[in-house]
Image (cartoon, rainbow, N blue to C red; front, side, top):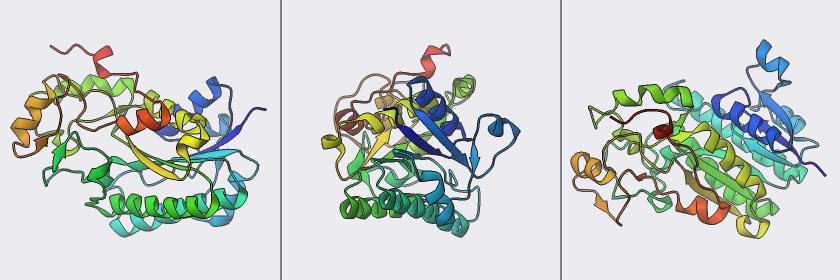
Length: 284
């Protein structure tokens, strides 16, 4: 039987990629977003305000699982109080409705910001992994930390698996043309250790969250989702030594390897990023 997956935030960059990927892989999709224009209506995106519990329950009813991407997606886009209150309300409503309706799984967008971004205070070590959590430095990041706590408790109460994907800065192939503008100044992208994630790998990570064996993902888990490399054309260890000379490099890393550790996602979900800006842009 074909599973029906609710995708919230379906009109956003990540949402569009996730919906397309799921449909290509044979899933039925119920797509929903707060802002629905003519293009989204053509794609059958259902308008819903997830800060209203009744609407959240309605869009989830009759689905098998949810990929919850709808949130104010970054600090600085709205006032701190609005960002926190909207995000935490949306997340609680979707999480609670999912458990009440007995959905099989909740895959949701947490954030790399829970780990201490932007790194105005140098990271304690690198590659930064899940043990660097929690270090929120904005109410946006705090909304994600609080939501991870809610997910953990609801998973215990309900038995529904929750998978929080701490996405790095999401990029499309069209965004890679500007990466060369970062290269002359190592400070420009230090805020997330020069990390990023291709939108196609966002989609595959969400799908891996849906399809990973139930015994592997029981409970609540959060994990970093980032590209395998950095956005820079210089060696990662060299960048770290220049910008954060006191940060300990805990293991030997590849020449351009990410400084955001993605091992947990590989171990739990069997997921690995497949896309790099280096496939689209010359490095010289």
